Image 1 (cartoon, rainbow, N blue to C red):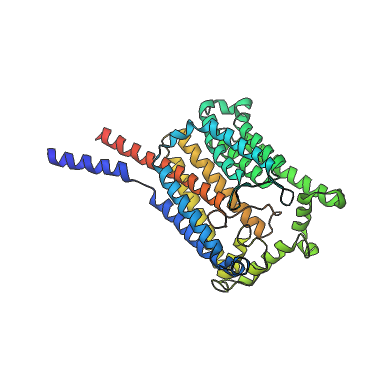
Image 2: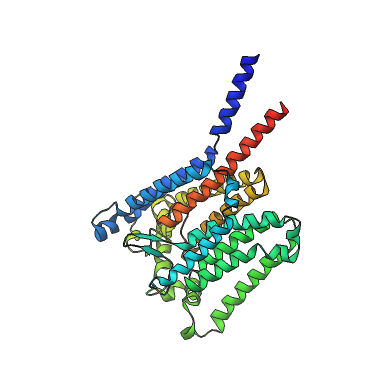
Length: 395
């Protein structure tokens, strides 16, 4: 009897040490592998011309992926409540990184990157997304769900996101990342707050504001005085009229989507990848549609839906509110970015310059996305340990 008890204890201890959410991990790894294949297919020709190396983009993305996976593994084994102690420093560091962009020379009117030497660059907006997740979760946990129902309790968790969003908008001219950061905080408050009426009111106000803005741009604004964002709205409404200028990228992406058909032209057979601007970044979904067709596009969307479903399961079974909010912030970030990217590529909304998570080329985004996955897996890991300990106590 004693020997059997000893074996049971050792088995439970092994589960405590070794449990991971392998379903979530498999989906992430599949998306990464798929992204690498599509990235090479998309960039090999252009890389051969520009760098005399068809694998230039692939090699760099492989390095980013390897580093991100190592970081993800390290974060997975760190108890997720550790990030509470870094919430305020992370927020301050995010602000500092955004302010550092002021020393950079503007590119196309924007300062979105920090450059360290000639080969290393970093996008502060990606770090800001992670900082907002852990800091907003920290604030909501301190405030408590009951106080969130008050006006000040509802508004306070949004303050850090609003500060970061304004800095990104005004200093780096990165409105899309600013909106994503606001969406992350809004989604976390939505999940934590038991009163949903105010969210409905805010959603209605947002839709009315968007309609009013588009109407003003189309009917009342002076085209000669409008900025590039207003110009993007006009391109969205009628890309054919701007085919030789600002509408070129949108039209070429739509041509790629339309030429793919049901099953696509085949991997590596895209013709539009040569002419679509930023095909490896914002517009890689159009190349997926051209090479793998409607079937491939739907398959990718299903994978993202499965990933979001796994996130929701982890959040619903989290050990505490802070863990649930961490996962909520990550799932909101990824879901919003996926929706925005696909909507832009299909010209459902005006162009915003948002990448497709795990698939588009980019080191900063991929590295910190995998860090977020590590935090989610840490929450899942601790949840399972709590379940095992409860079983031991009951048994």
